[in-house]
Each structure stands twice: as structure tokens, then as C-alpha cells.
Length: 271
Ligand SMILES: [Zn+2]
Image: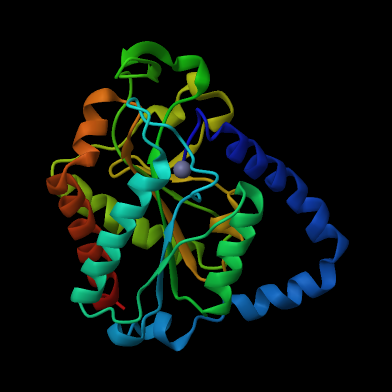
């Protein structure tokens, strides 16, 4: 998710999060009814029949509202699209035939509700949102790339995973996020630990698993409004100049996609 050029998207997400309690309070009775229905796992989620298990791999952001800008001025959306497409291919090759790549268009805020609507209409069992990380604007430094004034921060690197306690399948989401984090760790990759630091300001998050890097992010629309289990993966930092190059490499993309597919496979075997 982008904190530099994508700051507007983040602010909108925060705004929506702030609005949620009042919206829910306004229709308390039906909301409780819906919550009961939502808590009932679908047969595919309960048993995890691989060919029927409906996974929606969400490409974070849209071509119009592309998220963060990398240290070399490439939009986050492109990074998200390439990795999400590869994750989809890997999952299908592992037998998850009902996996679908979700690309959303339009402006940032409506796109959040559009993607949640698509996943809910498709009766998804699992929603996996794929992003690439940046840093808050105040941490950005300037350099010249390709003749243009550009921004970077080499201070932080690594992937991170987010889940929401407001999701009706929070426990399942956390379980899956941990499995993904474990697989990434086994591949020698490290997680982004800065989200607990005061320097992150409004982006500070509670670390739920300090071993493999799973954070709690309750206000995120795509995690809290989806009826399926939901996990958001920040695959790596594209504002870090070295890590951006790694995220661009086929080797790193294969490594991450393979780790995610293996984790989902393990998740199913255990059910
Ligand atoms: Zn993003």
C-alpha cells in the first residue's frame, strides 16, 4: 500500500474506518443478524476441498489510483499485478482451480468497496490482497533517477501481513497469515518490523505474531468488510532502492508466489 503518492488512498481508508462505527450503530439490529450469517463458514472453507476452494487474489489499487510510487518512479499497481497474477497461476497449479485474479478500476475509495463487493458476490472463501510497501512521506529522501528528481528510503525493508479482528473469520485469517509468514521466513526473507515504531505515526500497528510478522489492521475495508477470511500481503518495499530491484526480479516473485501457494496448500491439508 502506498504511503507516498498513495497517501490519499490511505487517508480515505482511515476516514472510512472512522465512519464505520456510526454506520453500524445506525442499523444495529440487522447488522447483528448479518453477522450471524457471516460467521457460518462455507462448506469449502470448513473442509477446504481444493478444487472448490474459492480464492480471490486481489491486485491492490487500480491503474488510475496506482498506490505508491517506487524509488525509480514505477507505480505500485504494476508490481501488485505481476505478483498477484503469478500467485494465481501457482495456486491453480496446486489444484486450486477456483482461484480468480481480481483487477479493479476507478478511483481509490469506490474501488475498495467494489473489490469487497466482487469477492462477496463470488462467495469467496479466501480474499488475498497483494500490495507493495512504501514509507510515510516524512521519511522520504531525494535522489536523481533517470534525470528526474525522485524519492526513496533505504531505512526499512521486508514484507508484512495484515488481518482485521473485524473480519468474521478473524481466527482463520490469522492462521493463514501465519502460515504465509512462516513460509516466507523459511525462504530466508525477513518481515518489516517498523510498523510497531513511533516513527510510523498513524500507520503504527499491533504486532500479532512477532516471529513471522503478522499485524492487526482493523480499519482496512478489504479486510473488515469481506465475508470471507482475508489477508493483506505487503510483499516488499519498493521505496527501498535495493529491495525494489529484488521485487522486480523473477526469482523473488517466484519465491513469494511459491511460498503463498504452499501456505494455502498447508492451510487446506490441516482442515
Ligand atoms: Zn498498496
